Amino acid sequence: MDEQHYNGFFSVFPELKFDSGLMNLMSLVTVEKIATNRDKSTLKVYILSARIISGRDIKYMEREMEGQLFGRSSVKVILSPRYTLSKQYTPENLWNEYKETIYEELRDINIMMYNMLRRADVEFTDSGHMKLTLEKSVIGEKKESGLIDYIREVFENRCGLFPEIKTEYKEIKESRYRKQQEQKVENEVARIMQNRALAMESANQSLSSKESAHKESIQKENQQKENTQKENIQKENLQRKGVQTCALGAASASSPAVSLSGTSPWSFAGTIALVRGRSRISTRTRLWHISAHC
Image 1 (cartoon, one colour):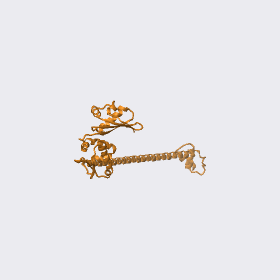
Image 2 (tube, one colour):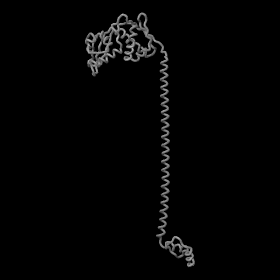
Image 3 (cartoon, rainbow, N blue to C red):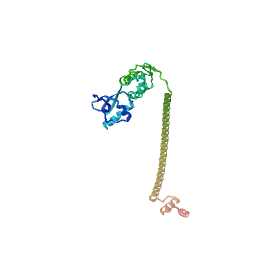
Image 4 (cartoon, one colour):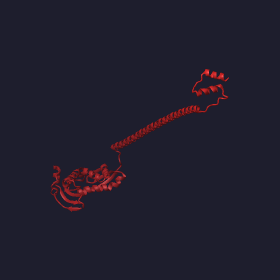
């Protein structure tokens, strides 16, 4: 990064405007140096203050500087504070005043180390030594060195205090809150599984109803087809009988004359009646023919 050295925060950034409290606080701040990366997308401002500036105020001023100095351009501003604290500050006093900022920064750096420090017991001895009692876990043992390095960076390099830091481990105690959370998770899982089972049962019932309706529809359709086929067969049989009757009548009308010799009186009389187009032969005519033939 390119670096330049300055003094007086508002002599370097005279156009900046904050609320009155921060204006008074930042009027006592000195700009040690300003650095930018090669593509000028990041501006890092190193400041020196005799008073603690909270992490929340640091983030607020970073956003204001980005907007007031660079407008809509995508330049990122980083304020890196360092403190020259009075002798009234001890490691314990500093921790009590600055711990929320430490938590916020650590959460952005590494969430596991943040959880470790949040759950740890922090104590200070009369000699100013810091004792961290961490929850015993595999992750805790792996992340311990990184957590200690960060705490040393804050106390020593940023604030000029040098407490001896010792760590111990404690068994994880199942707190009432944790039990409640675990029970809540179990209840939620049970509810989800129950809803899933009900959904599957409903889906199966719906599918069964659809299959039953489909089968019933197919049965009705087959029955209709069967009835239609029976009706067609009956119609065809009736038509065939009608054709056969007509054929027999036509065959009788067009048959050649029948020989009358050697026939019985009944046959002779019936033949004469058919020739004349009569359908019935009277008894009187039948008797006349019989007597005449005799």
